[in-house]
Length: 328
Image (tube, rainbow, N blue to C red; front, side, top):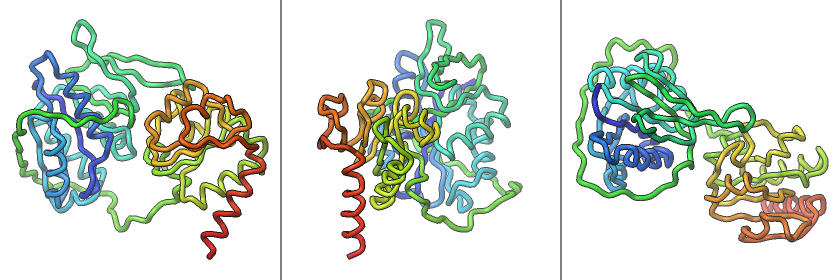
């Protein structure tokens, strides 16, 4: 078994996924005081732009570069083959991926093929006194689960916005360009087009703008107004734990420690008082606007703009104002 910690780098050939950069920092932290090296895995076709961004960020000792036309977009079968074969050749001790749609797909497939230990959607990583990796994830509506993967080879996907982002320093990494034979890969599917999705249905951890509701939304009609506001703004819809309990959203749309941490440019909270666990989930939001009847609600104190008002009165006005602007 080798002594490398690998981080799979997600990108769109122009920009690096933030969670991948966060994991580089966490990998460097795990490697401190050990003989382990940190390696970044960069797959794709036209990689010059993202490779330069990766070099500027730093934090890795090695970059494994696999350039191939069939890697222009994420294809499960192709990417699984490449990562599995790369692991077979180099035997890392740990592989970290972002807990995104692609990361969870790839991590599980590669774990099955390689026989590695696997845990998805983790939010904490640490080494115990014996040097075992302890992974923590949230299960059963907010309860914590810690797992030690007792396996020579370990793969984990980690939630975005857990560790934060900081530019790393270090020596220039060694770039290893790998020539990968892909002639025998049989694909069961192909990518024919990318269609922009409905912002209201996207993963809230990746949303640029979020409109979120809580206990102060008192009816289904009022929640529909909130969804209308989100649609006018082109924002994702989310909510507090109470919004889930009232049946307005599912678990995937819950913001906070019992749901997801978010980092939008704009977070608009309507009828959310701001319990500690919810505030934890929005601490990385760039701008927070809150609407609440209670001027002493905790969320009002950390908001960039706090509006003391009844959501039932102000939401129709906001929707109408936006409708007027977009229709003219």
